[in-house]
Length: 456
Ligand SMILES: *Cc1c(COP(=O)(O)O)cnc(C)c1O
Image 1 (cartoon, rainbow, N blue to C red):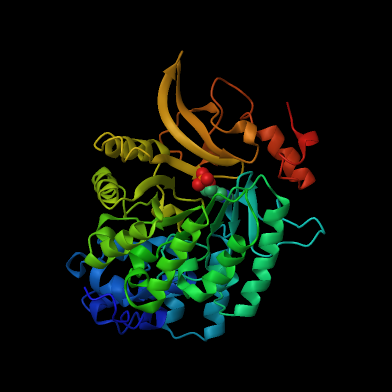
Image 2: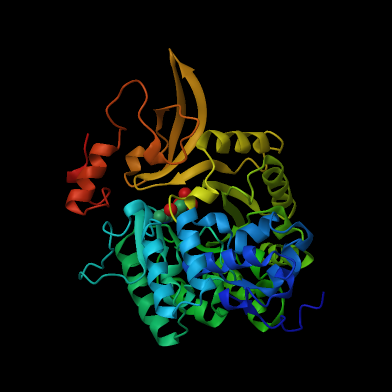
């Protein structure tokens, strides 16, 4: 592969292409109409690399990457699907379609985990820091305003309300000023995690506007810079071809030379994403430049709900010098009913895959739910006395005192999310619930700074 040549021109397809994409012509027209109906409600965007390299068109609609990226009729409930289909079939006015789309979207829990009201981070002067979330003591999440889209959308993601796309250097540096000021004032923060959207949709020059000031400021507390991205799977040329790719590798080196870890938190859902030459090269180049590539993804029905896929992905990741990190449980939002996997089944899939890899791949943790109090891992099931229970563990928590704590819920083979679990042994509530109510009432989420609020 000649990596000095520029990457192929990025071509992207959305809902207006569902009738014209040649690959879809083999599908029944009624099925395509249903796909269009779903695409009015849920985001759809896919690029030619995904279409040409990741989807086996002889296996559509079952192909896992087709399920991961294209709208599927089962994503809406039957009535909503029919209503939207009929509007399209009779060529209803655009305004009417948009109104119906909004109504259906509102039913899909667009803002899960109640993270909005808590923790609007502010500098000491009281200025809100645009695009930041500080939920766990050691790590801040940062959403660069210029990185709020992706190279393709995952069908289960509902972050689309923030997909606005901005490419403004001045705005980037202003946003970075707030970030640096905040990091200076919060010596407890050791890691900055850039997320989105996908920050790797930004040109490296723009990414440097965010990362550069952290390196230039004297911030001895910051030990790692992380970038969460799906680009190694959806657009690996971002890391392999042309000047901008090389410039990103230099940015990795620059972070490393500042004495910090540069972690690329790569989102790999299915093994096919790691099987193309260009994807492997992308990971290898980042590893060679000095990045740690840590891999994570949610477990999704129809996409990766089998142990063999996870086992093979984790093995391939280790081969490439990447590190398996988290298996997540799909969140309680969007087309949840279509994608959800019961926690008990998620645990079995995880355990089956985990048992077939060496300790080098057992850096992975999960299945893990990102919920309001923290990241909760299903650590197992057990019989305690007469009761069948889930053994749960807090991997991350709003209150650092909760981290690594084990607790128990009544076993329920159908439960798919934390809100469906009840405490075991007849307890009225989980250990964190009283403190969570206090945080929600007061709006103070950072207990490590608000010691007075701590509930013993
Ligand atoms: C997962 C997550 C982090 C990072 O947690 P690690 O366990 O350190 O990877 C930070 N903030 C939020 C809100 C998260 O969900």
